[in-house]
Length: 356
Image (cartoon, rainbow, N blue to C red; front, side, top):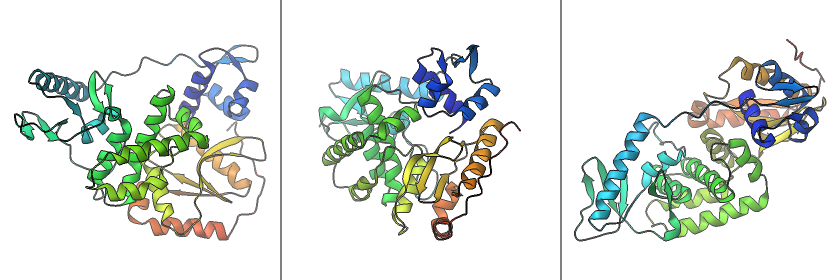
């Protein structure tokens, strides 16, 4: 987790009010981490022993492309309603508006035509209607909600729909299902959908994960047979603690490796008393799924470097992989993990110089 994410997390849990280092520690932010945040200017000292996270800048407005899409859909939904046809945003269009990540089995998917779902009617034909695509289908009231003033399939239904469309195996069906599950938690419990850490923290509760699985099974029960097999195969693997598409894809691949499944988003406390959250933990091995946006700042890269040195000093082996590796050569990744499990590192107790 980057310094910027940690500062944002402190801002949320503190409610924007001053807090002490002891309070930060109770929120799983170590003393050393606090020093890093203060040095980077992400946390300000307001008086002796008390700190505050500066108010963030106003959030960016939706992109012009998204705004144009929303406007187009509103016009079409209103026009269909005037003609007596109820409609809702569905398919990949719904998934894109929710911000649920997915991937195609042969690489990036082409942009999809904005899609609206309508109930079958003799006075309406499916297919292209101007700039949108009309598809026929039915839905239950609990499968529909509202976003940007538009009727839209819920995050779970949207995720299932896109998984049925793009996936032929559990590996590719799992990322959208996990994304939908995390959004379901956010909306069910009143969390900020953009707050990855808050959702992950709540998902640590087995009762919350059970609630998600029950909701997913019910949502799948409403779907048609077409394309549902990989979705059903992926359901037991859905874990809302997984934060990214790469983590979800790696989790599904791990389930096929023959290795014991790790613990996702696990906190590990080193000998110095510093607590770190890692992507995957299994015995002496820490797995890190490194996406392109994970270490975009020098501060984040330095924090990750010192973290790895300290973890290795405590006897952990850190095994990293990228999307291309996990997509095309997963056996090589799990060969490295298996070797690390069978050849544990001896602790050196070396501590990095954090003042460098």
